[in-house]
Length: 300
Image (cartoon, rainbow, N blue to C red; front, top):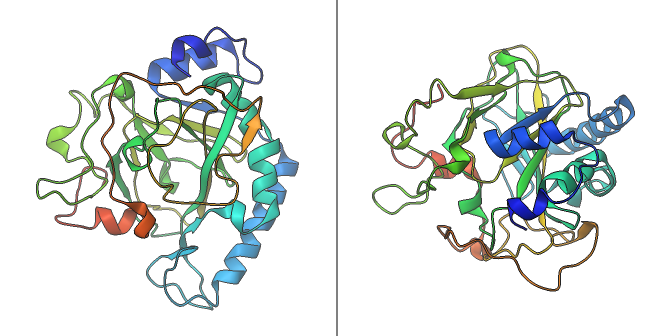
């Protein structure tokens, strides 16, 4: 569904002002959107998965490990597709205000695409270079959004998401380098004009929703604090938005309608989108791609 059509519908859990801000800026922080009961349940599910990771010795399709991970000191970088590993994560993705917020930004009919649980461990937690998401999982329109929830309080020292205000209105940047390698990274010379002045740190208390437009340029710095920064991310789209390519983080729930009805026609945005590599042959995760070639310093 296109933005003009979404705006024809009344909001449900977000205010009209919050929705207008999202479409203007390309991001939104909705404080205290998720109650303590949900946060407690999600933390419990997260702890269960961290416990399981103790027996993992190298990164695989489920667990992406941070350097120094061990049975005695588990350090995860990502749990891929948490909805596939613990029922609480799918229940949250389908039944919480996260999906309700997607109604306000995608339209009344909402489809689930994929999920991930990203970590930044204390005194570490790798940075994430500037990039845009939609080139990794292009759709027939630009309705997809990422709805994140901070499971712990996240201040500037924890390495919050950073977003470039208004960058979703810019032309898409290529996620390939000059040698044609997929790097999921935007070099500094290709960043928008005055991007440093337009950089926003999306900090928030535990239970805050952090919502990103699929075109907005974003990244994050390392975690310089003594506290872990877990960020649960669910990606939704309008029901009439159709993925062009193989889902890089597939699950049995991909394509599930979580609000409203199944679409009978597809929505097409006239703006094209760069296509990623063929993920059906495997997806190694963004950090390995970003490590290709010279290391970027723009979010150091």
